[in-house]
Length: 464
Picture (cartoon, rainbow, N blue to C red):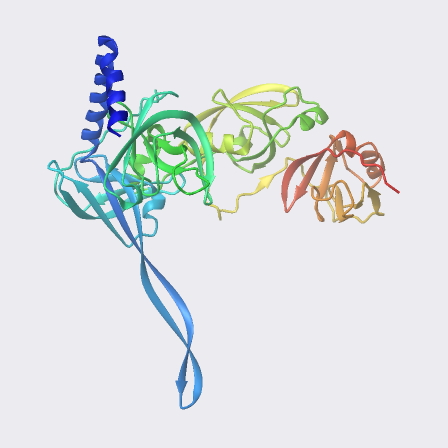
């Protein structure tokens, strides 16, 4: 060990004077950031009350009488956070304090002694996985400043501070490995994250990721690891995203989200070819909510959205994030292709409705008058089809069909490769002209919702 240390130090002292000074300057910067963060980064001990109901036998004069008993017990969790104002507001992850009945905040004073306070949740945003706590004290606290500049770059130094595994305050360093990362962990979806190789472990959640000027560039939120321990990939919520909701959650207000009112699917090359589109990337509109901003702007099913505010849109998640992180009343500029023509439209977002608000999506087609008409059955590629009011209904799918696993019983096929199914007489022509081996795009309705589905399966000759 001594030999290794001697060699590493000799390399520094044998380096040119300019390089030595630069190395020592960097060392002092790291020391300064650690000193600044030390009193403002806190340890969180969270208690959640759980209960479990069991049926237990009781013996009464020789008879077994089942009795229901409820047991209550506490579950403890650990996490980190950091103070963001002199009054003792603490920013952390929502998942760290979710469902908490008691929260204890521990911090280090200027002399390195631990002080403990109780705290309560002021507000939170499950979608961005952020929460603000209020320390129950009239003391004034040291705090860290959030960096809203958005100037973080790949390759920048990064310093993570927190309480991993419940140990004492720990400082680790690395670089910014990537930006705009997206992951899904334990059912929670994260987007637009900063990826870093600064060591982050369980218990670090909610702690700050700092730049060399001591400002918070992100809130450490998750790691990706096959073993559960740090494997060189950690993620933090950027401060620029925190800024969007911080005022609301600090004040305990519900975070209001922007809403466009469309459902889209990723456009693939087969869809683009069969639908006669000149673009090969974008999001094809499956449905538009009646009365939504998109509906009022004239966007209809089959349009292809290629960009939002100049940034490419390829998936539902891309567009969702670009509108969800905005507020009602904000404007977005949508670039989309409608009937072969590229259009740009500035659309004012509405407030995102609650999940149970009964939003009605429309395909843009009005159903014909009258009830459903019966028609003779038609078979194609292992499908048993019949004409209904607005298309061909799938009554059965042969398990040996190349479409098995793609289409489902009850699907209503409204068009095949842009050819509409308008009557029973259309079935042989529309389906007969389509070849699965060459690729087929179905415009269908499933469970009351419209969708485009592309299928291409190679022909496998019969072995008999």
